[in-house]
Length: 307
Image 1: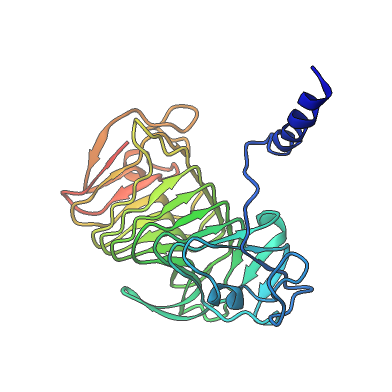
Image 2: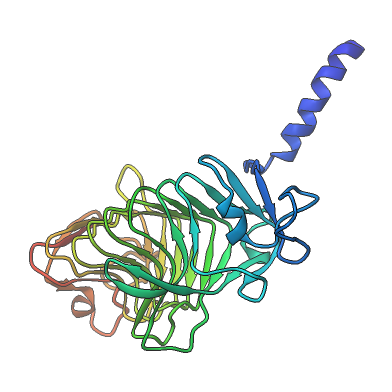
């Protein structure tokens, strides 16, 4: 190989090495840093904005806002809920472990008024944050992210303690006709993990939903969450939730829930997996397996769960 070939190939070796974990480094149009930013800055890597709220007001369709590690809350200047516009992506630069969004503001959804952290518009993305909605108002309903239309992408986030001890609330609430992708998140110690309303049809993949106070997934009204099919298994971990993993409260929705890991009980194998089967309501596997952890319940005749 001559010296000209080396000069051409070596830069590509460096680029490939930097992407060896399979993750693409996000291309950012605007930068935010709660610790050192200023909203009078240009929003560049060397002169970031201070708040996510302000950066999102400047975005155009297809653009990406990237947040540096830190805590983004009312003290740092954020206004809640933070609304991510249609076809705009909000990403953390270094992942959820060090990038915390903490706060909530009053917001009216079709199913009621909530204290909300984020609203995800159609085709928006929220990627890589720890999300908290602190609230002492236990009679209120707190929600980490809500979406009511289109197909947002909610991924790689950690939801911690949202609405724990409240009469209601969830890490993520889907309503209207929304069909978001909810993937690779953790939902721990919340009231519910995911609550679905309207005719929403969230696609739920590879999430860890554990130790939530009530359900991991609660489907109400005419919601049809997709927790996995034989061709596209859910690979969610749905274990050790206070009431059960999945509650189908709809009148006639058949919820796909193939390929997940549940609490081990008399209906599962030793790894917490179910055989392929359609179970129709009314049904509660707590009755089928007395004294063991309930994994799901179907409230009404006509509704079902396809495992």
